[in-house]
Image 1 (cartoon, rainbow, N blue to C red):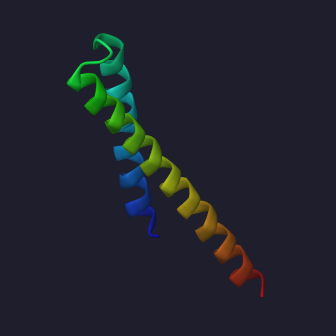
Image 2 (cartoon, rainbow, N blue to C red):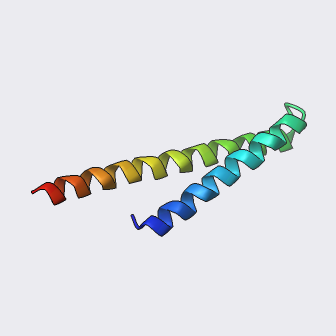
Length: 68
C-alpha cells in the first residue's frame, strides 16, 4: 500500500468517525437518520481498521525483506 493511499484512506476514516459521532449526539435513537449515521460510524471504524492492518502487514513484510 502506498503511503499516499494509506493517508487518504485514514483521513476519510477519521472524518467519517468524527462526523457521525457528533451527529449521533444530536439525533434521536430509533429514527432512520440515527440508523444511517450509526451505519456510517461502523463503516468509518471498519475502514480505519483495514488501513491499520494494511500498514502493519506492509511494515512487517518490508522489515522481513529488508533483513534478508
